Image (cartoon, rainbow, N blue to C red; front, side, top):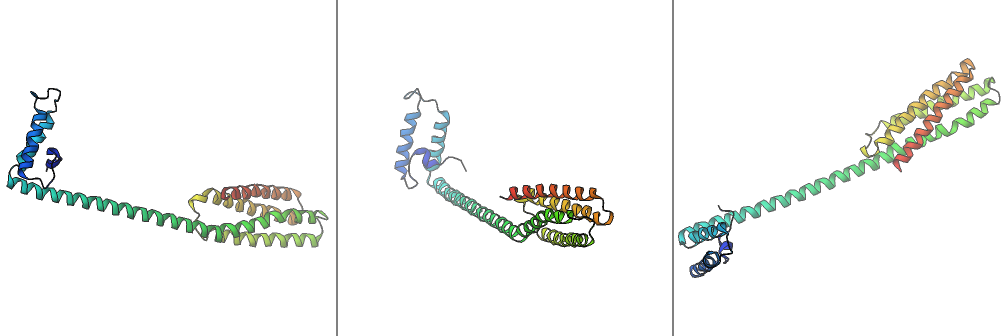
Length: 229
């Protein structure tokens, strides 16, 4: 079927009579005739007009054309409808994905980030006081026992934080924060083990190394918070 609507080409309605079609054709032929209007050089235009009249001037060919036209219009409407439905489905699917992502982020913040953040903050902020108490007499057995108990408590808390951290997948939006938390926990773990060597050897280098690892962990801890806020 032609891409051009024959009725539109002759500028008549689909219900036009044969007399109206003939009259419209004659009018257009005059417009396109070079002897009457020499400024018009639209050969394609006159070809479309002749083709349209050839079809619509014959009752049988016009009937066939009308049937094809109705089918084409119905098919075009169906195509537009399917595109519209597809667009709506895509919109709904996109909204569902966004909703799921938002819910996953909210769940991660509530069940992973906040409790882990609280545990790590407690561990990192408690070391200074413990070091100050130990400094009163680094060779006192009672203080050393308390220090070891403190380190064991930190191990248990860190283990709890690590379990919570692995309990849910990290959201893509907070990949940076999750990475900072991961390395923060790693530094804390190494720092605890360095500090634990001091009561066994009384070598203050272990205290200094442990504190330095905690300082690195605290920087990562702050960077994680900045990534989330």
